[in-house]
Length: 170
Image (tube, rainbow, N blue to C red; front, top):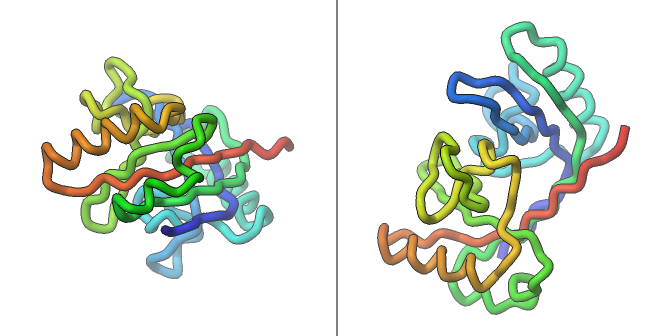
């Protein structure tokens, strides 16, 4: 089981397909970048709140991105990489927000509750957190059924992760 903890910047931005809420962590490729979306950086948050704040300041000064809201948050995730790990008490607690991960190459889609007409990866499985307002699942049993359905339909295991994203005031 993998545990990911750290600080991220969350920005609501206008995109060609509508508004998206993008979660940014530290850059993992190239020295010229200081941040990248978590969806493409291997789910790598910043180690300090100060680094994430610096990223938000840099992002807010960019003229090529239409940001309507941005904030600092703390991220805490546990990822069940194997089916056996889903029996851990962390995942069976009913009050734990959880998401489904869809990995393709080095990219990861964060899948939450289904939102009608959400762009991107949306189907019976759920909608990308980018476009569903960062709404995670709140019922482990439902999410387990969705994961099993997606796995049987594609032949790939869809990891389940706890998803605690806490906005830091300021």
